[in-house]
Length: 429
Ligand code: HOZ
Image (cartoon, rainbow, N blue to C red; front, side, top):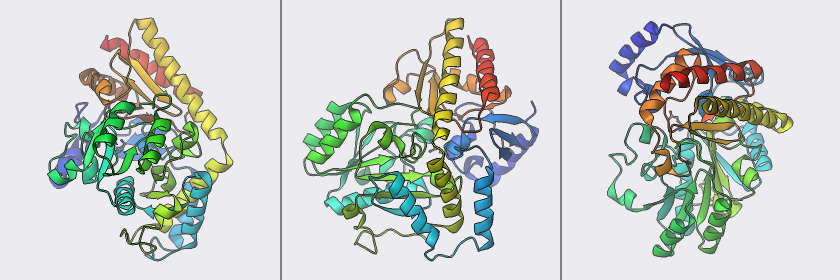
C-alpha cells in the first residue's frame, strides 16, 4: 500500500492548519504515521487520495448509518440545493424535522436545531442553569460532550487521545463548576449530590459511552441516576449525539427505558451534514429565546440542506426498523469473530459491544469506566491500527473511540474484517 499523496497532503496541511487537521483525533498522533486523506466513499468503502480502498468502520463517527453516499440522502440534498443552501429564515422542513424527532424520541417535547453536537451540549447546560438557577454540573470521567469549556474536564475522545483531558484555556471558575464522577459509580454521584445540595443544575452523560471506547451502563445505573435527579431537581441530560437513532430508533433512552429531561442529538439527524439539536421537556425548552430568557441562536441553525438530509435519513430509519436488526447482527458477528480469533491464539482482550457500536480494548480486564479504559495498552493498539489499515480496514485512530457499523456492511465485509483481525493480531503476539 502506498501513502505518498497523503504524506504530501499532510505536509502541506500542516503549514496552514494547526496540526494539519481540523479535528485533533484525525492526526493519527496516538497511532503513529500520517493520516490518510480521503477522496470519496460509497456504501461500506472509503477511498484515500492514493487510491487505497478500506472497509469503513468509522462512518463519520456514526452518522453514515446507511453507508456512504446513500441515494436517498444524496437526492434530498440535491433537491434542497436547487432551492438555495441557506436562508437564515424559518422553513417548513424544520417543523417536519422537529415533529419527527419528538415522535421518535417521546421525552423530547420541543427541540431546537443547532449546527453540531458541541453547540447542543453547551446550549443544554446553559438552559439547565437558567431553568434551575444553579451553576454546577456533574459529568462523568471519560465522557466527551464536545469542546465546550465545561466539558473539557476529564474528557474522553480526542482530548484523552492527545493527553489533554483537562484542557489549558479552561478557566478555574468553569472547572470549579464541573464536578466529575467515575462512570457506572452511583455511590460517587450520590456523594457529589449530597456535598453540593441545591447547587447542581444538570447531570450530563453519554448513556452508552462512545468516547472512552464503547462502555455500557451497568444494569440499573441509568434508572438510579434518573431517580436521584428527580429527587434533587437536577436536570438529567442524555448526550445522544452518537447513540441517538443508532442504538434504536429512539436512541439509548428507548433501549434502556429511561427518560431524561433533556437530550442532545447530532450526526445522524444531518445524514452526514453538520447538524446538532437539543430538546426535552416543554417547560424546560420554553426557557429558550425567544420563548424565554436563555439566549441561544445561529444563522445556519436548521440549515435547509442539513434538514433535507436528516429528514431523508430519519424517515428511512422510521420506516425500516430492520436496519437496526441488521447492523446489530453485523456487529455481533464481527465481535464473535474477533473473540474466536483471540481464543484460538490464546489471547485475552476485552471487547465491549452495544448494538452497532463496539470497541476492542487492549486489556484483559473488564472496561466499565475511564480508569479501566486507560489500562489498555495504547502502543499495542497503535500497531494493531496500522496493521488493520494496511489490510484495508479503516478503524478509528484511537483506543478511546467506538467503531460504528453501517447498513452497507455485508457478509463479505464481515469475513474480511475478521480475517484481517486474525492476521494482524497474530503478528502482535
Ligand atoms: N467526538 C467524535 C467521536 N468521538 C470524534 C470526532 C472528532 O473528534 O473528530
